[in-house]
Image (cartoon, rainbow, N blue to C red):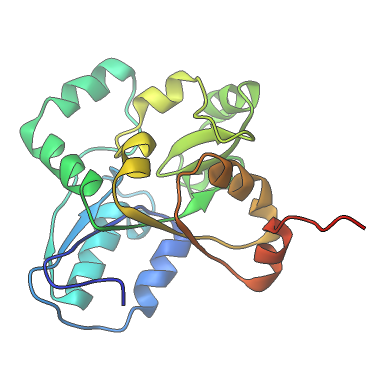
Length: 212
């Protein structure tokens, strides 16, 4: 219902978004583009990758689909900068930042798709604990105050930066589960999302408590 002819919709990745894409009712609007927000190549959990989900969504919407041919996390910041200099990669990230609607998931980095897929090893998890990471959005990690964590790991992520999403598209997060409350609080405090789609129990826990 949010989409209009000529709109761009961008998507991140993960189990929740995969389920959302599966449940989308096929439809057709003119000149729709679907863009991945996060890199993702390789065989590990490819069915959850942003590129794969973008392709599936595009097929359901009879839309044009772009692909971001880069890993979600690279070895170091220098490799990231080198990849960002590629015109094709830069163009896809620009289109994602300029999309009309972005649909994202929110993760707990210590119980996440990223960990299960092997993107976060023991070293990365220790690094995230040391900087107080409580959640991630588009594979970028935030602390309990909603600040991007000052960690080299955030400089290795191939994704549209959260700062650009914050001032660009209408961002809809789909996330539920009481185990993700700290993650949700952090991302909400950062102002990175405009709309949260969740189940009632989790949503109620996020509401301000009335004074007795």
